[in-house]
Length: 132
Image (cartoon, rainbow, N blue to C red; front, side, top):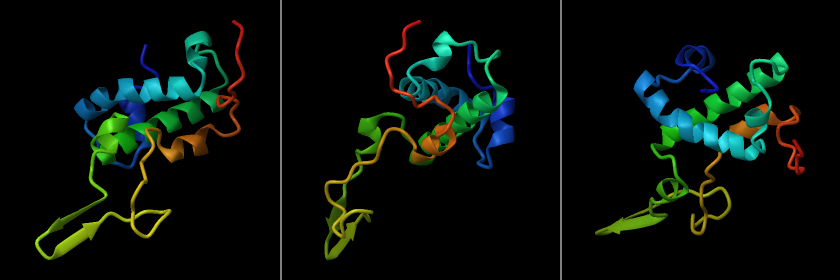
């Protein structure tokens, strides 16, 4: 069962992402959220859980789908495949970095940072070992 329908996605996003792109990105985005939430909704029925927490989870899922769509990639290798800098003739271009002025040795994460904004305070980021 998918965590999010396209209709729900359209209500939660301001981005213009078509249904085909949504369907292509949803499985990987769901896998990312399953991983960081310790597979919570594998063990707990999402239809019966607290609606506030479910809404936050779905907002996080939308953020992850948007992130993948903006980057045009869904794997760590694809996301970080672009060169930090390149030179063509006398023109040199360096991708900016948040951490160093040269832009070198910086990688982008697989998980959108916005995901943590939505999930913080929901209990879904608990990394304790669960016993079911």
